[in-house]
Image: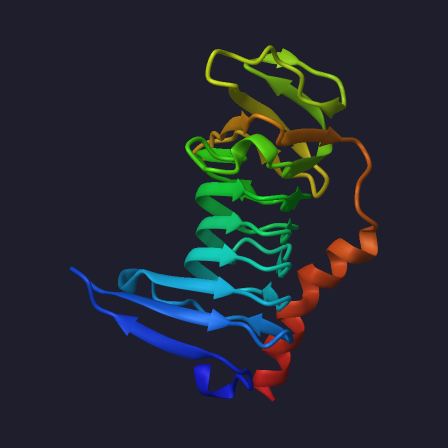
Length: 228
């Protein structure tokens, strides 16, 4: 199945312990992933140099790093996503569905938009201990309704909680996302962390229905082509 992909990439195998490998997309093009990058080999996938990567059905990655003004779109199907995703250096991650099972982070002026999906245990806007954290203006936006923090209903807009002694805020977020999926349902119970000038925003405005439908059906279209 991998041989069918016509993409420019290179693989560097760096065997450490059980073995890690890197898969890099950096040609500035648009690429679709509809296969499972083997989680047992702990692939670290990098999207760089303004490249766009679409995760379609069955497209699942262990560690995903989105850098250098690149874009990753996670389609509106369950069997897609990653264990961990990090956007940095003015990059964008759009999540319409799927699952992020562990950590989702926006760093260094990056943007994460969440319209659907099962989000894992930690959602970070900024990151503690990063050298540029005081000037980081990254934004994580949740699109949906009926949001609550630590069991208390909250209004739309930027999460506004008193900053603690470590210049960060945290809490447990629940609600309903734009595609109808719940935030905070078992086994996914995300805690959010906001550092310094980074932000988490709760937005009522949903994406255009055609956008969610298009990404949700993308993998179905590819599957039909393969079956012919």
